[in-house]
Image (cartoon, rainbow, N blue to C red; front, side, top):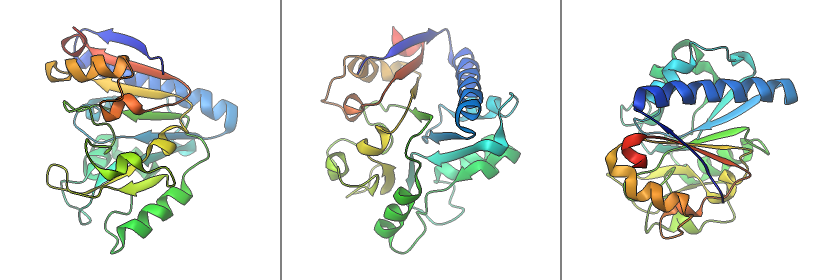
Length: 220
């Protein structure tokens, strides 16, 4: 898959540009279909983008935010991506559809979340880790080979937690991918992503179109 790479001087300008990009896609989607289906990943990098997004012209009453991945943890646990997402979005957090990771049967919960997903996402935000993971598609886990489910749970803990994640088939439903990549430790995985290198999980993602927004530290 080809990626449209856009490089920014620092995380601040990257976050501002990414927020503007998301807002523009939201308005386009609502004008076209009456709804904006936006899937968002965890991690620290997008928090500033989400915060800036709340100050832009976004049709929140027509926006549905889906989680790309989430740590298996109890309701209110600060480890959960949801806590940080809600904090960044403030009053607009009502648009979020949380992954049901606090259910007793997380596999059944994953299937239920998958059944509720839209037939197409207007935009899917992804990040990339120093090890090349994206979403919670992590190196060496059986979740990388799931083809018959849209949402699955990792077979083992990653950085101390099992995860619920969209699978490759679910990510392929994206009309557009938006990758946010920042920091020197992302240089090698970013290069592999741009080369569609299948040796890292991020390099195996396929979708209709992809924009990669990176700061100069990651893109050098």
